[in-house]
Length: 307
Image (spheres, rainbow, N blue to C red):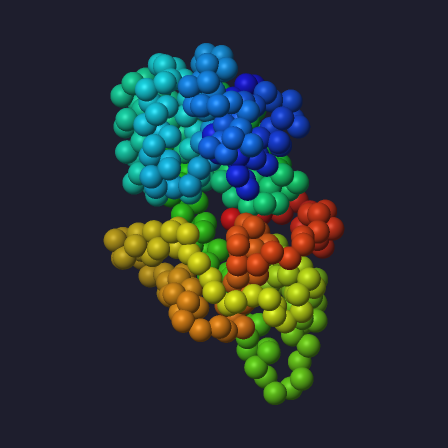
């Protein structure tokens, strides 16, 4: 299929490569002239065949709003806009109204995979109609690993599902982080790095996140180069806000979010773990150790990546 990809950063650029590798024709646009194949959104739309398909991978908030508003004026009835970024689901509902009023299809796809998605594939959570899903199925099949995408409901549900996904991710990361800090604090001369390595094999707490933490520890024993400062990109806050609105208890996810706030006050071993994991799966800027190719990470084969 032929489609446009708007946003060629850490994820969008790799997604475009994965699609092209599977035979799709991708026209890429990015505000960075060096990364962009075309000079404007207008040129991107002109290069596509009707019905045009445009995938948006830009930061949530104002950048996504501006792209959607521009595309609403450039595209025609029957065209399709896919938002694969981490957009707040209420904004997604608003974008859907703007586009559908003009006869333009709008699909929201919660996308997980981080910087490893090019090799491992992306987990896709699709909010759309059944007809839209069938039209876009070849794209989803190319981006995702086997069984790595699902139609989770109508428009808005893709981003809502990804919001909850990232909230769970907060809790899992925090549990590993706290366990690591307790091991390092014990007065028993425990080899904490060895303990985490052995948990990769046969343990009930093994996971791809654990594999990434071990990889970070191998590149930086003791995580000495990390500041212990962990950012939050919005999804954790949205998840907790939804829990308050719906009166759903989320003690673990809420505590993990608040722990990130605490990390900005002082350095702690547990927050170094959070920083290391964010760097490993998402390429976030807390730290920049050299990463190994995904196929060399033990226990990652066939697993869905976070981020």
